[in-house]
Length: 145
Image (cartoon, rainbow, N blue to C red):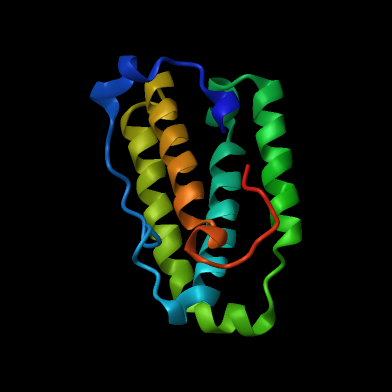
């Protein structure tokens, strides 16, 4: 994600916003570790979808964007959900999609400006860090993009 950085962050301070995410550090209890792993996978899928759009391709270097999408795809392939995990977490999919819908609406509102994309890039980088299962005490050998 850092490779996508194309605008100076201080330049975009006026465009900053807070994107609520249900998996922020400290919100996942011990009994929700399966959900934590599931959240991470769902978030990777949503980020992949967000950065696969035509608007995203217009905002970023094609090489850096291709690298990110390839990395996300690789992570998703290594994180195939187990059936019991999917059944246990079905209701959470709605929460994840709703939160990412607000990101899409933010980009629309800002007319997909470079600064809006920089804000989204920084937030997605933060979300990847916060949602990574190994950050919550699970062992995980896969690196996030």
